[in-house]
Image (cartoon, rainbow, N blue to C red):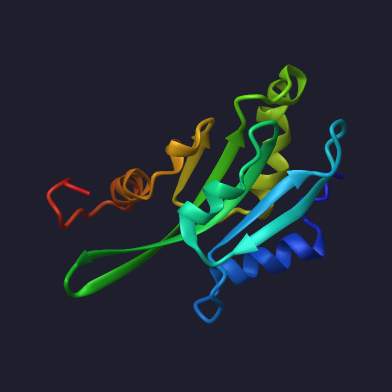
Length: 146
């Protein structure tokens, strides 16, 4: 078992999804350089920018983030993104196992609108992620201008 369904990860997932909790992201990392044991690394309230600052360039990490944006002056949307981070200095064998091992994470962090595969911190630019969420959500009240 990978530990993706640990009580700490499940509680953090519930917190990110809750409208009553300020937590808007969680980060999961591997417990050791080898093996597939996952653990909750951190949670935060500072959105994508804060999350990006916590990513490790030498690791594969998984994140779940709540993104709020306005469609127009009358409405606010809340969507969720799953981030699969493969740092630029990650070892080859760890990279090679991501497609297989990410399945356990996807089963636990199951409700998301887009998956963001990131290898550079700029891949988590809020404007770009919101554009992807708008596109995934169907209706775009901004004429495609993000």
